[in-house]
Each structure stands twice: as structure tokens, then as C-alpha cells.
Length: 335
Image (cartoon, rainbow, N blue to C red; front, side, top):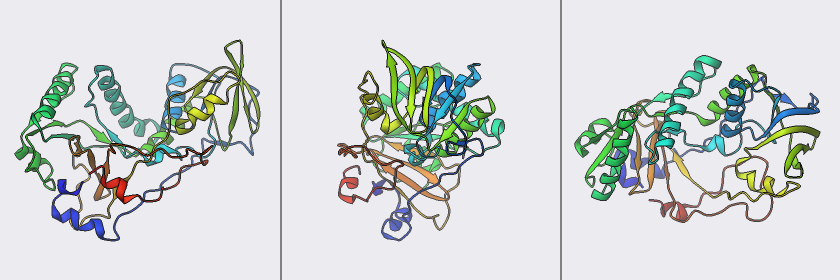
């Protein structure tokens, strides 16, 4: 992993500067279930207070849906959402994914104005590296699709990469793609902003409320059983993230959801001696299986493991994700 960064950064790997990130805040828009009774019925019940569940609540409320209830077993954004690296890029291979990412980019930017909650949105741009001609051809295809739908991007030389991000080692590159309007965010703060906006639109949000099972009659959802009582509903949306599989099996008519949690690690440094600029481009090196972004003047860098290790294989996992024990041997396979 660290050959991609120049020595000024690599020296910090063995220092005490590698940090673990943990940042979760609560909002006044959440009604804690122990102090407020759950409604007896709702039009829609959403399970999960991460970025997916809060986004569903936000968009349904924007579309004019009423009587929406969101239930979170722990705290909002305290699951896998808070560990997300927060890289927002439109460089996707499918046009529909490119359009969705472009929409998210614009949405997260305006959420700060809509809610007054800082989402950590910074337009940094992204640079996608190519170590081989095959990779460069693939990037050229993505670049063409982006240009067709009106998203600025260009193929650039290794020399230009070094100019845009002077900490990068570019000796083995044959080219790259630059997407200047890509951005980074704080995923947990985005989820809180979405929840705040949804609450302002009438969505009722309850944390520390676990759904025990979904009630079904003749293939139709009729309600949910929680640890605080029942809620009758017409629609149920499973946004439980890494708990979605278990929740699906707990239905009165079980649903098998093809999802399981795996370990994924990234590293955080303290601010560099010469702090990295907040708008320094995000780096994605698919050939090297790593990504790099600015993090508070330092570096956040993670790897894409060839063989991810599953976690929580023995029964129900914990309520909220905690930092996993470091596994340097497995982490090095991603470098």
C-alpha cells in the first residue's frame, strides 16, 4: 500500500500517529423509545437508522408520504455508516450508477443549507490511477460515459497526477482519470442531516428500539413486533445493513437476503508536518487495490482485500459496531 505514497508519508506508519475513528452524535429530532410511546400504526415502517434508512425516510417524506416511522436498534449512524470512508465518486461503470452518484453529490452538498448540519462535504475531485494499459482503456470507457451525461472528467498523464497530488509516487503509472467534481463527506453526519430533514417533514424517528420480527399474512406485511410493542403498517423497508440478513429470517414468512458482513480496515494518520490540503484529490488505485483521501490534514487509506474475512459468523452480532482487532497480516494482502 505505502509504495503509492512518498516517504514523507510512509514514515508515519510505524509511529503512534495511526488513529481509530469514532464519531457519533445524537440529534434532538430523535424520540427515545423509553420516554415516548410508539405509535400503534403507520403507513411505512423503516428498520435502520444508517445512511440507507435515513435516506429512504428523507425521500419518501419529500415525495409527500405520511405516517412514516423509522426504528433504530441503537443510535443513528452508529453501525457501518460511521466507518464509511465517505468517498463520493461518479466514476462508475454503469450509467444508472453514475447518475445516482451525481444526484448524491448534489444532494449532500445542499443538505447543509437545508438542515444547518455540517455533512463534511468538500469538493476534492478524484484521480483514478492506471498501472496497465488495460486499466487505462477501462478508465477511458468510464470517462466517455461520464462526458456523455454531462459530468466533467478527463484522462491525464502521470506528470499531471503528480501536479494534482504531490505526495503520490507516479513512477509505475501509464495514465489516470481525473473527475474534478467528486467529493468527500462524513457519512455519519450525512445520515444525521437526512434524519433531521426527514423529521422536519413529519417522519417519526425512534432509537434504541429493536424489531423482533415482521408480521406477515398471506404474503402481505401487516406490522412489526418490537421490544417496545407492535406497530401495524402497510409497508416495511429493511435497511438494517449488516443485520438485514438476520432480520429477513426473523419474518413470519422468512426472506433470505444475500448479505453478510466482512472485515475491512483502513488507516488514519495524524496531520502531516505539512498538513494535506482539505481539497486534496481522492486517489483510487484499482491495480494496487487501495484508496487514499485527506483526513483532517492527514491521510485515510484503505485496501480492497482479495479475500475478505467474514465476521459475526456465530450467531447475532453486537448492537453497534466496535473497532475490530487489527489484523496486519490480512491487511497487508490488500497492499
